[in-house]
Length: 419
Image (cartoon, rainbow, N blue to C red; front, side, top):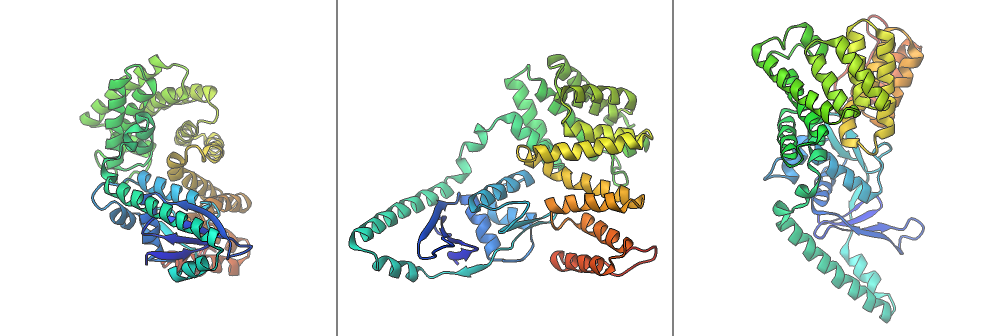
């Protein structure tokens, strides 16, 4: 299947060349472009499985068979592919994201015959045909360049040209051990090259805290920073030594850049992990004075407010974090993507538990507008619909989720009034 019609794009996978059909007149050529190699391979893999949910692991193994591909790498490739296809992640027509699971191609896929193109060319006037042959030669040259780039893909310098600090930040926000270790290495490399970079010291401090919180000791039963502190998970000598090192790095970061929300956030994060909540809140408040839209700070201070019994302040902080993430999503998609839907769904869950169905529905719908197949938000909205009398709508929503995600949620009213 080297040539496929995907939606309104004719795609030649042997060269990466794409031609968009003109909706007004399919006989007339539309926009043309050429996919980069990895985007082309990813689209081909999805196109061979139209309508199927393809996991991140499957895509990574298929498109990067001889190298490691982080969630960040895959997300960036999907993002570039969407841009090429003029697709919108929030209202997709081609590639739909299934949160925490993978992607699926939702556009119609069919083969298109090369002969039709040749026949159409033969009907052109002679001087147009000369132009068509020239275009064919240029396409062959482009194809050769595509194949050459595939052969040299392992040695391209583009990754090294990207700013180390930005790459480290992206790895840090993926919340996986391998990515966190990569972030630590990149932050240290950046510090070696730029010893007065406060943000690099802050990033390294954050990564060390995250490593201590998530991948040391018995963390299986504790999902938040404050729950792990309360359970004494971080009380062992190794964890305390790691946190002391992180504290020294964060203090160095603040000394270098005292008016930076990034460096102040790192210091607050370390203090939180040490159980020094009130000191951390004061530092976070200072950071928000510097940057009121620092969504990471809003998330962290929200958790501390919640842990110290100040739930109204916690809700305000979480809502401010969601709004800030929405505003900065186009610039920080890779960093924000793992958090924004979870925060919105958490807010929906809170209001659902409080029987504030109007606010719960509002938050669940905001999440679903960002991720149409978000499992927790869809189930939460189903519960809201049932609780407010729309049992048919609740059942339909639940069954559609089961069908799309191949899950087996119980789609009928349960005890307590929820489906």
